[in-house]
Amino acid sequence: MEMRESRVLKKLRAGETVSCFKINLSDPRVSEIAALTGFDCVWVDQEHIGQDWATLAGNVWATKSHDSDLLVRVARGSYSDYIRPLELDAAGIMVPHVMNLEDARKVVDTVRFHPVGRRPIDGGNADAAYTAVDFNQYLTQANEQRFVILQIEDPEPLEELEAIAALDGYDMLFFGPGDFSQGIGAPGEWNHPKLIETRKRVAETAVRHGKFAGTVGGPGNLQELIDMGYRFVSIGADVVGLRNYCHDLLSAFKGTVDRGPHSSYLEN
Image 1 (tube, rainbow, N blue to C red):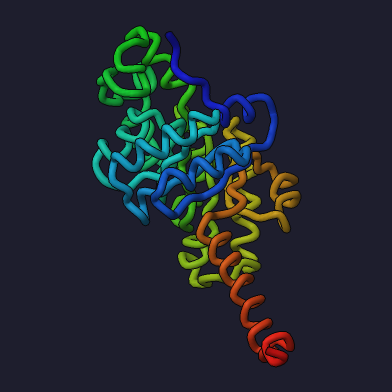
Image 2: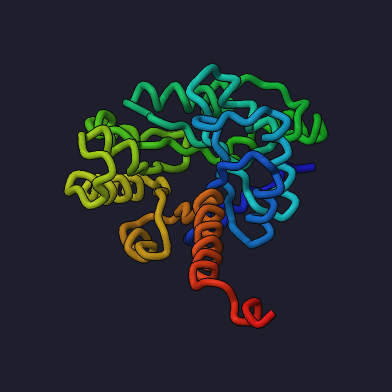
């Protein structure tokens, strides 16, 4: 028996562009809807939301049953916060706010098995098919088929960006514009020259050192991001879609009601 292949890594290694959808709501059925729609990757969040582990396991089952990868942005806590999503068989993790080269090295050492790192070994969980995957094969396949993303979302790591990108043992640099805009003292200024420059720089640096580049975007700037070198784009979120749907429905409702009583009502 072998570990499940990562759909994200398969597409990226083939030179294709990966679609991702972010989930803020906890119900695994939301992740299942995104997977059924055909997204390559569904992103759930432990940094800002903190789902319990049973709910997180449900999200794993909901996505991989439709051959979609689950990405978990982990909390910056203990090593267990990093490896438990992988042991639940999430296809990848994203570590937020990587601040320097030493920080990146510690992440790699924590989440990769020998000979790359010193990730704690269990093997009795979902990712190793509850010991059904051969022990040594498990270590090799976990390093090859589970992706690790380092998030660049602060100005501080830019001083060592080249060295971080050159580091072995992880797969992707992911540019986060939200916190970066705050870090440069321009929160929400998406067209700030420093933000635009850094978005391009992260992609170019990642590609130059054989890493994939990821970020957030939308239909309006997707081609621009692809042209920069980004091959992993998180293109939407459940709460945005639900909020906009409710807003449109209510606007239509109010537009009808505000026109006054229907003529048929007056005739009665």
